Length: 168
Image 1 (spheres, rainbow, N blue to C red):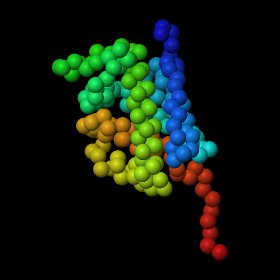
Image 2 (image 1 turned 180 degrees about the vertical axis):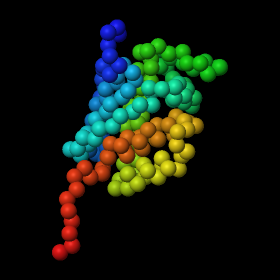
Image 3 (image 1 turned 90 degrees about the vertical axis):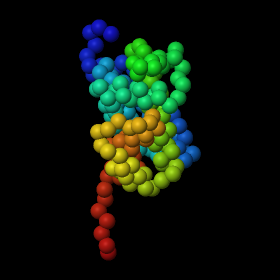
């Protein structure tokens, strides 16, 4: 993609799910530098968050986790060799990121179903119980951590507008 800037869009996609029987829609915009912007709309509110995990060397570790615990379709996602080298094209990287994003929204859905009103408390607790800055050991831990990041930074189910409450 010659002539495109680092913030130009490379891919856009949408993930739709029913969360607690209410439709949700997440619109993702993947940029040339693997920076990902997302708008999560649920219960009439839109929450924006970014995922930068794929912009750095940690992307390689994330991709390795993607292949670690499951057999993946080689034509869609590429492969991980026995010696730990990734064999993926740019298009396959985009497919991996799409799948990870679908899984992040699935994790958010599961956390909402499990903790409902304590969603933000759970997300903070989960992130705090893991050593920061370290890649997770499993794909599931990686996705759950990303979901908690999105819940916290997107303010999902957190009030975006405060009104003064005064005792009469």
